[in-house]
Image 1 (tube, rainbow over the protein chains, first blue to last red):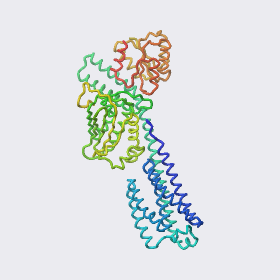
Image 2 (image 1 turned 90 degrees about the vertical axis):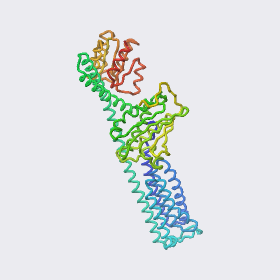
Image 3 (image 1 turned 180 degrees about the vertical axis):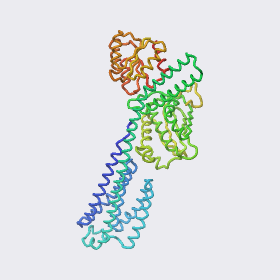
Image 4 (image 1 turned 30 degrees about the vertical axis):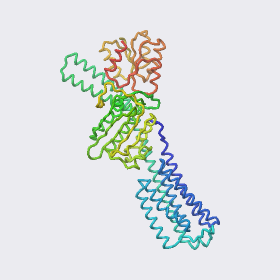
Length: 434
Length: 118
């Protein structure tokens, strides 16, 4: 199922990591070459680096808010090292602010990136203390008078040692960013391999389900025939009950295969149809019953008006809800204490709100912000590819529904809002019939 | 009723034929679409109902349906049994099939469906 999800994101991600890497490489090279060559426009070159440094910070912010957060980290690294270079090279009063911005930027970065928080703080604190100490000991690294507007060869020669330190800093930055990029690309490759493997397993499972169709139908027909024959011949109640068990088992197998096929169906050309809430949740939860049982998870379905009609692409929405339930099961299957998933619906006017809550603790805000992003997952490699919630959200959006994480709940809770439902309260039972 | 069952899965074909015979119907069966067409030709289209699988190795359910509707637009009624659920099934209904029954189906489902054509 595609449902408009941008599946090409990882390729772009890799491209951007490589691109960022080259920017770091070329930027640092120009930086060093320009400084060493001691051209008359050295001062302008440093100003240009400063401009890049500022732009890189802004770029970092935007990349960080988008799915390209890996590129954001690399861009940030380059911004930091460009900044260090610039601030160390020019220690005129007008540029003191640049110097002090660095550790704060590192700290800010650590806030935006939950996974980088530790290193963000370490980097920020070390750079703040270290550079303050260094400057107090040595004074400005280069004796440059910004009012002159240029360097002289003597300026650089007299600061050869300090300048070498800048070189080392830049090279460490380059090396760090490069290693990081390689590591990220490797991680992405592993993830892509895993995604392909899961995709192939999905295809194989579909084929197996189709292969089971005819034998299951034959099994059911033959069991029915045997039971009819035994009844006619006046067989004992035990014998009739035995055939009844076989029939029920074959019907259960048929339900499992049909549910599986429903979940694997393409929904590209599916037409919207009216369905009751209870039917929708029955379809979505049929395939989860075995996992719920295995992990001792209590499924509580509390629908206020189970017979209310909603118009939707039934298969697509069932698949999306299945993704949500499956995600919940993965999240709570190993947690201690009572495990439960609760589905509640409330209706106000003609808007239906569905709460899908599990016994897991609500994730931190920085995680909930990214939960619906493609390929974002907190599960270990091999457990999931981070597409379930993305597919679910895209599907709900395509039905003009709204879905979001309930940040006020103590537990993990998703809310789905469905406008314009058709009330159907005749013969209604207050308890869910699911 | 005189019913023709066409399915390349021997187990299902036989089980379906037997259960229909038990229910009092006269049943012929074929393992492919082409064989089914031959049987229809030889019987001068005297069947009251045709039940056919979609995918068969030698002439599929669509070919059989096309032949039947080429001879007579409405007779006999045609039930397609299939494990597929793709968009091509809409074509089958447009071409004149009366019902589509998804595998795996139960005895009660097929018997009540057949009864509705009496």
